Length: 599
Image (cartoon, rainbow, N blue to C red; front, side, top):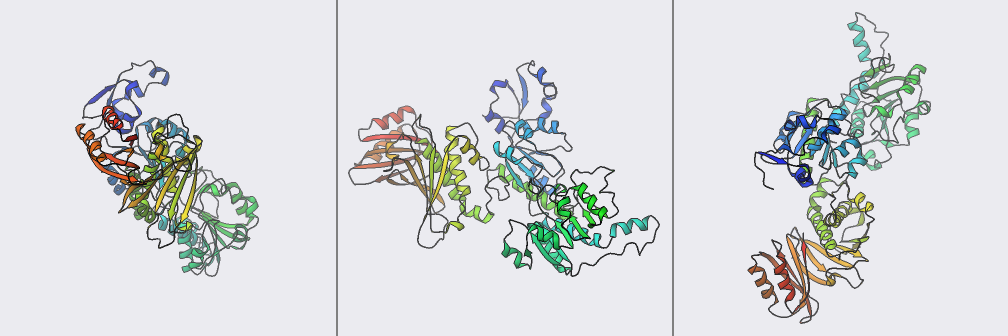
C-alpha cells in the first residue's frame, strides 16, 4: 500500500494487521476516540481518521530516561516517543501503536502489556542487565523479542559494590552524618580492615567477576558460589567455587550479584542468616528481592549481621518508615549501581543498537528469550540461518493439502564436534520456515519452539559427523517431513518422506537435493520444480513460455539420476507466473509433474 503524507480514512474492518505493522500512527490525531470509555467506543461512528507518517518508520516508546547518545541513534531509525512515568493503564493503552518498547528497572512490562499490543510489539529493550520486570513467558508467547544491555554497566555496578563494601567497613556514611550534625565521634566509628578477610561473591557472572578482581586487589580472599559458572574461569582469577552453604558459613563479607528468580527470591532468610558467621557484613547491588528484608532486620538486631550496605530494595523507593533503611548499621543508596555518566551513555547506546538491530531483523546477541548465540557465532552462522529457514519454507510448501505436518527431522552434516556446533538457532529458523507459510502466526526466534509445540509439530535433530577439517560450521542441512503426501511426488525420498537438502556455497544458500534428485540452485525469489523426461530442448521450451509471459528467469538447473530417463528442472523466477503460463508448462508432453514454490 503506497502511503503519502496525508490522512487516510479507514473503517475498522479495513484496518488489517498488515496495515498496523507497516504504518506509523500518531496518537495525537485520535484524542477524542481513544479517550472514550470502551462501551462508548462501540457506539462511536465506524469511520475515523488515522494519520500516517510519510516514511512509515517504526515507532519506539522510551518509557524511562535514556542517554542522549542512545536517543539520537534511535531517532535516526525510528519515530521515538519519550513518555516517562506512565501508569500501567497508560502503558497498555499506548503500546498498541508501538513496535518497540525500552524500559529500565522501574517499568513493569506485564502480560497485559503484550496482550494490549495486539501483536504489533516486536521488541522490548531493557536498558540494563536484570529482566525481572519483564514477563518473559508472555513475551515469548506473543513473539516479542526481549533484549538487554548486559555489558555497558558491568564496571559501574562492580565499582559501586566495592564503594559500598569499603564505605560500610569504615562507617563512612555514618561518620559523615555525625560530623554534619556537629559531632566528633572518632571512637564510635572504628571500622574493620579488608585485608585477609574472606569475601563470598554470590553470583559469579559479569559483575560478580569484576567485583572479585577488584577485591583481590584489596588483599581479600575470594570464594564464590554460582551453579552455572565454569570452574576454569573462576580459577583463572584465583577464585574457588564453593557450595552455597559453605560460602555463607565461611565468609566475613558477602556480596550479592545474582538475578531475582523464583529460586533466589528471599534466599537470604532467617534460616540462612543463622548459618552465617556472627558479625558478617553484607553488600547487595543485585536485586532487593533476594533478601528477606524483615529477616535482615532481625539478624542485624541479633548481631548475626554486623552491617549491611544496600543499593536495591524489594520495593523501590522503600517506605520512609522502613526499619531496614533507618537502621543505624545499614548504609543505603538509591539504586545507583549503573549511575555513572559513562555507564548511562554506554547502556543507552548498547540497548539502542540492540533494539534497532532487532527491528531490522538482525540476529540479537543479547536476546534474553531466544537462542543465546555469541556474536562471533552469529556472523559465522548467518548464511546457514537463511538456508535453514528457506529449506523449512520449501519443504512445507511441498506438502499436499490436507496433510498435517506433525513429524519433522532436521539433519546437520558437519566436521565439527557436537559441542562446537550450537543448532538451537538453526532449529528455530527451520521451525519459522515450516509454520509461517501455513499459518497466520508471525514466527520468530523467540516463539518458534512454543508455536511448534502448540501445533503438535515434533521436530527432532540429527547430526552426521564428517571426517576432515572443520573450517566451516556446516556442510549441509537436510529437512524431512514424515507421514505426509506431496504436491511434487519426486520430493519423496526412498523412505517415503518429503526431503530437501541445501548447502552454503560462497556465502550463498543453495538447494542441492529434492527427494533423491541432485540439483544446484540459489534459494531466492520463487522456484518452479519440473520432473520431466530427460531429452533435448526442454530448457528452451519452458524458457520460451515464461518469456512470452514477461516472467524473468534468474536461473535454470537440471539434475538427473540416469541420462535420457528422468530429470528435475529447477527454474528460478522473479515473478509468479500466471495460471495460464503454469498450465502451458504442465501441458508440455515431456513434463510429468511440476510445482510453483514461493520462497
